[in-house]
Length: 140
Image 1 (cartoon, rainbow, N blue to C red):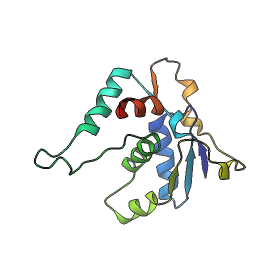
Image 2: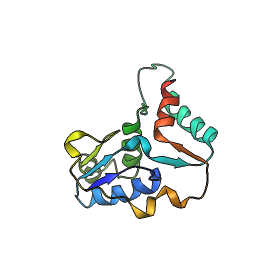
Image 3: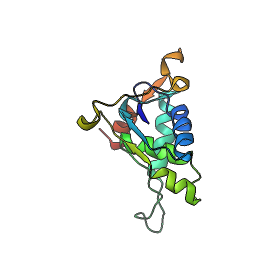
């Protein structure tokens, strides 16, 4: 299954993708940097910044480590929807591929938009794209 992430709501899209992955279907997501999160920008930034700043006091090089790039944020969100501690969850996670933009080798494929995750139906201006969030987390 090939999914175009343009203006898709992150949580709803992740839920649908997790169901397909658990069914054994490989999923490829493109345009991950255009996926959106709805809500207050400051609260979203605060929540994700807190996650990325977590470290063990005794040894800061130990985890937990949270992603800061667009594709990895989307991938980690989908991982949160899978039963990660079970073998079926880890096998399903291996079937997932996420790209920030459209790769040349996938240009001829037919992409699907998940209707339940369409961001156009929100009716609010309180959204943050994953690209903006990623730039904030990396300090750009």
